[in-house]
Length: 285
Length: 165
Image (tube, rainbow over all chains, first blue to last red; front, side, top):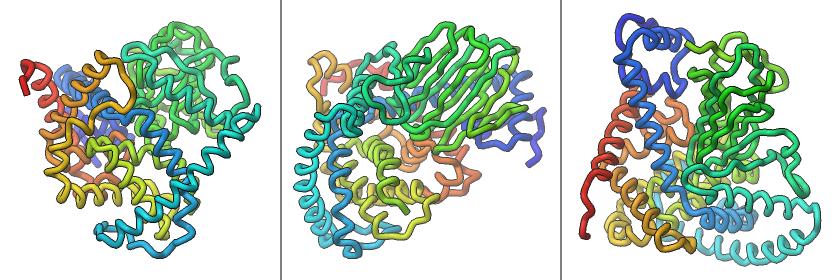
């Protein structure tokens, strides 16, 4: 679509710009316009603020971790139950609750609850075994809960590996920080990154974004990481697949957005190897 | 379609979305659960599972809200109470924040709430458009307006004097 760089972009277009919904040409045009139009830059800033406010607000509605953990445990246990009676429920699409359907559902999950109790006992036994996957899963869950309740202001950084691990997380060997997805989004900001630095970005499983091998000054808050003046010549940013939206800003430019398990890198000259995107930081204006 | 993998990947986000949308942990659990039951009963292509689940959950919430709306209003304050043993001061601050956010959300149209929460979950505009039944080209406009409305409603509540009720 043609876009006139002289005309002011609408708020809809600016939101789409923030969300990475514009094509490369249109994005470049909006970018150019923003660099020379204080009014639109202000509007963009207002929309970002509103967006951030909503993300924080949505985060406040986060179910208490105990809810999630309990529901998760029950669902994990119950997951096997439906397959035993597959084909008896109503179809999908436009849902239409009926009494029959409700009865079906509740009888199914009651059975599941009994299965859950058995599994909890088995998990308890398995958790006692050093190095067992169940034990690492529990360790990980506890760390995530601790991260969520680490504090409302500047939560201490948590260090998390993406894969199950035996005792202590191996990633402690590489200096860095990670934050949990206490809301649906995370913003990673790297400031004053020297031009010669290699910025490597990759998607990881789990719900934590991390910046590693960076050096410099780290600051973290729920859903946010800020690194200023990284000293390393090659830093690594990990974008979690399971978080709704993750924005990576480098030297005041939005350079990558992770959404829906996909990574959209918006800088030129990106080298992609083994799922890792490597690029130089954009210069500061 | 690998049900276990789909569950591991999408359950938490689906539960979170419905919980935010309804403010009701029981409904969130029930709807998320029901959505996965339906997933099991349908052939859904791997690449569509996520948006399929959220669409089903959104529809389930819509249908439930018709019958549960009055009850929800009555139970609202209790529903949002913390389920962990907070200290009293923590509980108060958290409850007040949640109440303010919920009230600001209630100021929005149902469609605006959904669109903001779906965006928050990282859906693309084309997916959101399909889920809520609008043109993809309208999503940006609706989002911008919804963001502005939410901020306005939230700030007003922030500035409002303490109420007695």
